[in-house]
Image 1 (cartoon, rainbow, N blue to C red):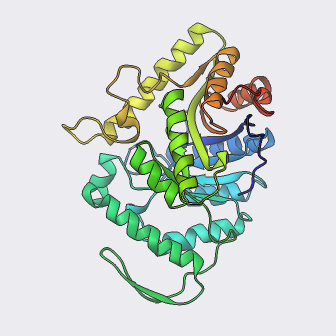
Image 2: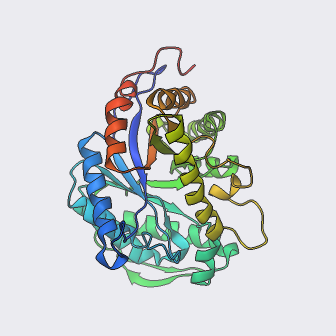
Image 3: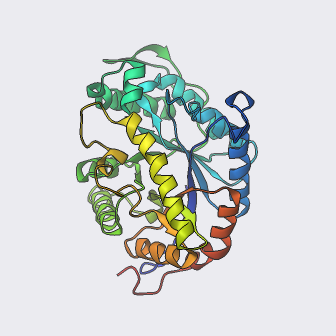
Length: 353
């Protein structure tokens, strides 16, 4: 992936989307699939407004008709767009046969002309581990074995066999080859120092969560950058994507009402994610025990308030922000018209110091 770079002491920010979708839409039931078509229209409009990417979640068994076939929807989006990067955020490897997943990802990468950003993860929702009858304690080992298989599948054109703990394959060659070489970039979500260092050392790109403060973001980017350099790997600010919720409010009353809606939406995610009787956890669970913790750093506010929050993130070193947009296409237009242009050029010389 090639992005234009800003000067050393200034950051040109790029914006993408961090999205989900539901098959239903308004009064139209899931059987219509209208929500998925609305999602496609939303992303087509985002491309026309200058957004660089759209990362799409994968979830199962919620009862909300969420996206469960991420690569299929991204393939549909590939057919309607030309430049938008197509990201998965994330494909949960313990749920998938790694050879079939590598084949599907490579096909999407070819059809899209090399636009796949392959986000992968271990999973965090209790309801999904329960539904698939996979022990959470196996997640790490399943993830590691799948990464090894997929990397080999992407990078070799020779037949190979694999006999691991979870998967056995005999005399296979994975087809087709992906467009990007050596393979579509792997993106992983990480927040703790050990997990960030592991991602950097392996050459993975990094997704930082919706909820951390600018100070935490600065610390995490610094850890990632230092570890890459320690490993002799080049660091590009665009290798780190920061997720943030967005709502451009008309006034304070509108802002507070939107925050209440967002808190309710987040609570249902927490409810299906947490193991009964447990406290804490990864991703959203790490912030949900503090009142307002999942909304504290959301980009909710007037254009002036959002510009100030983005400036703080830019000072923290964030160059690539993935927005979860509440409120539909009009919100995209307001952000692109009233906020995005200020961050499309370099920050002042002292902004990143």
